Length: 326
Image (cartoon, rainbow, N blue to C red; front, top):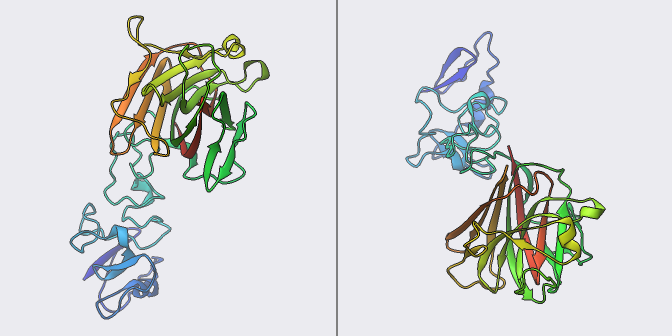
């Protein structure tokens, strides 16, 4: 015998449907969801679990429903109460629109991992940009005349020479956590006078300006393909006209950036995350296999601005991008 709760009234049913005065329970709907070995579920994505048709990802490994839900509180089958079907009513669900039976919340910010933009970072919760793949038109505007284009759901910058940026239409913000997946293409000449060594770098730019006289200024988090270094740098209004990108060091005695302890390859997917909170800037690279490299600096040159993709001395394909806010 199973139990369902309807408002404050406990309904007990067996084979026959029950109608209880003062409750809006629809017994015929429940009958349609009942299942057995001789009466399988017919809807795509559903399975028979504890006698009822439920979503496949919400059935316990032992064939029981929702290990984290008390036994007397079987999943509410009314989508108005539990629209994601994970057994947790929306008013007590840390992801009310995304099924998450376990209610895992790694960073303890009250938003479940399943719908948290940055599950391991309690400073950022909501996605303000989430492009799992690119479609035309995109919300980016090229700043430097390069022929950025959407090709097979990727956003491609095909020019190997010079500095090229594409700025997103997202409004200015002080604090960002931005993530992009990209692949290096063909290397070329960066066209810069600073630094002296040629860069072949791709990545993210934060706190950028879209005004004509400051176009492209901001912080840059990127990977230099040739030197295998993870960098944070910046450009200023005067530096842009002189072809200068200043790479930041942790202190005066150390070289800019962090050495990446393995060879980088073209057409290999890399994931880059850039976090900017107050004066604290963090650039993180994840390579295939889950190995990560992190570089942190502090700087107060820019306090707010927009978000952009960039390349320096290389072509690149950008496959996905996400920007998180508080």
